[in-house]
Structure formats: structure tokens, C-alpha cells
Length: 215
Picture (cartoon, one colour):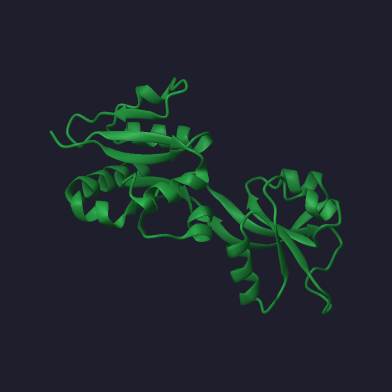
């Protein structure tokens, strides 16, 4: 019997959505229903190679796949765009749909004038590339917590962040100026692992593709 294939999954809501998707693809995901404090769980399949699900923080998924300790991972397109790495982006899983947006306080004209602009974000690289494409050379301020605080405290003129409903922005007096990119979760594969386990991984990708189409 072939060795299990490790797949990194971000803990939380996306992991729950992945659990449902993998179950539709034929994997036994019962170990993830009550994972407790364990971080690695077997996901058997009656016909395909077993998966070992590694539960991690979302930003670490890309790191584990890039470093080769996990052959596969499910990561948001936002994290992929920010971090990059030596992996293949193989499949749009259609999960966790949201938008990457530029927002500012209501009534403020962020794009007018030639003054110094400051933008707070958890995603400095994505933000820098996007604003550069608009011909803007803004100061990027990295924030780890709630970006909405930065304009309220006078730290920044605008923010870039992931937006799902927009409720948090509205409650803090911010409005969307630009919807930068649509975002969904993607299946990524380590380059070396794909060469070694291509048949097994292709089988998984096809099963997930069919399962995603039934959502």
C-alpha cells in the first residue's frame, strides 16, 4: 500500500468546507469532525491513496507545501498572491469566495491630490503591486489585526483587506473604493511531490474537481 499523502488545511471555516468537499470526493473525513487537540488526521479512501490532513494556521499552509513537508495544501488565493513559492496552483476549489478590496473612510477622496498616501494591510506585497499598477507610490503599513482601525486612528488613509459581506467596513465608516481581485481557495501542490506521486495526486485532483462541480 502506498504511503499517505500529507495535505495542509487551514483550521476554521475553510477546513469545515474542505471536509465537506473531500467527503463528496470519497474520503472518510470522520476524524475531522471532532479533531480535539490532534493536528494530523488520516482521511482514508476505498480506492485512492490515503490523505493525512495537517491542520495549521492559514499562512503556514503555503510554507508547509513550499518546504515539501506537505505534498498538498488548500490555501486562499490571497495568501498565494502574497507569499508565492515553489508550488503548482492546480485547482480552484470554489470555496471561501470573497473579494480583495481597497477601502477608505466615507467621503474621503483617496485618489485626489499629490499628497503622501498611507495604506494599512495584512498583505503588503499584493497591495504594493496593485497600487503600483495604478501609478501610485503609497506608503504600505503592515497590520496584523483589524485593518479597519488604521483609518480610525489616523494611521492610514485607506486599507486593503479581504471583504465578504462588507458589514465590518460599513460599521466603521469605510466604503469600498475598488474591488481588486475575486478570491477563492485553491489546491496547491509541491513541485517535487508532484513528480514523485503524480498518478496519486492527479487522481485526487480529478476527484476534487468532480466534487467541486456538484457544489
